[in-house]
Image 1: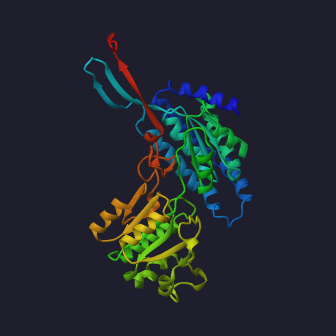
Image 2 (image 1 turned 30 degrees about the horizontal axis):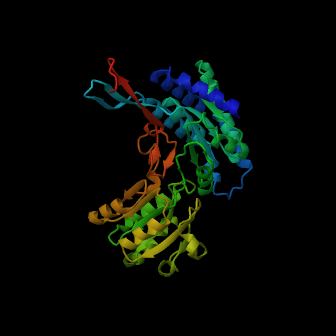
Image 3 (image 1 turned 90 degrees about the horizontal axis):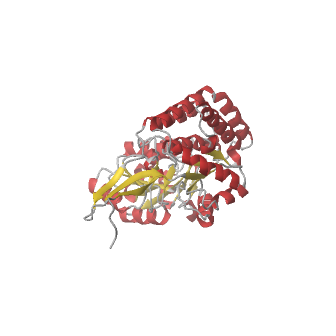
Length: 412
């Protein structure tokens, strides 16, 4: 494995010699290849899907379609068209002794990515790393291995056409041993980003000997306030829950003010055909007879603080905004939270006090996405506070260095 890391490290140096225009042209060529070679990708993806049960919550996340490939290609072209994140002067000054200081943005060097059943990540990570001058080491899961290998093969074919060292992106074997090697690649890999469930992220954080940025795990809540609009709320809750249930920005728990329980059936009616609700006693009473009985269950303590990644939603009744904030503080994951209210003061307090990377007012958490934020693709959603937070795109995977110019000054 060290031989792979050494080759990627050497190849990363060559990226500094490329212009932004060259990098962008190559990304556009890869985007074209995604569409031209979609049958290859879909065939490989079908092999992966055949090994997974259709009822598995990760099935939707694993599945690629022509429409999804078109979206991936579009995101890659968007990344290509974005301004380069490199060479930006973020601070500049001259000291009293005449030394000229300049702080400038530069690549990390080599970024390692560990991810599960997410074949889109191979393309997304490559586009962001390549555009920002970083080489990438990809470690996908067994569930998506056929898809990932076909995707990286296509990337390598395009790189060869442009005379670029294919070692600027490497895909490791889909084994636990490869994960362990990557997490111990001191001196080769400058940064590791895990993207997946809580177990994966905890393992990477607890095991790695290289720097790690945590991403992914999302226990997402939405609070319907005493002054919330029912029609708006129904649309927001439905979109946040059902747009794609397997993604990290999907809604897991609806908090509702006790004075609005009469409106709860209206809020959840758009989901009645597919979503199982786990309701506390007041919410269960309000829904009993107003929601399909086979999809209405009593909540347990485990219903709250759970990332379902499925057509399941917990409901909790609260007495006040304070109780909603307390619940989010105890059960949220710092990913995305939302409030539905027409009271600006209440919304301001919610957005001020909620400790999460993305906090919404009258909008669904499904918007937590690099492309939706106008960042092109994303490498993940950072839920930590040290370093980048929220959708991580080009600027978030660069660092900086100081350039100092003198005229012979010496330090006394």
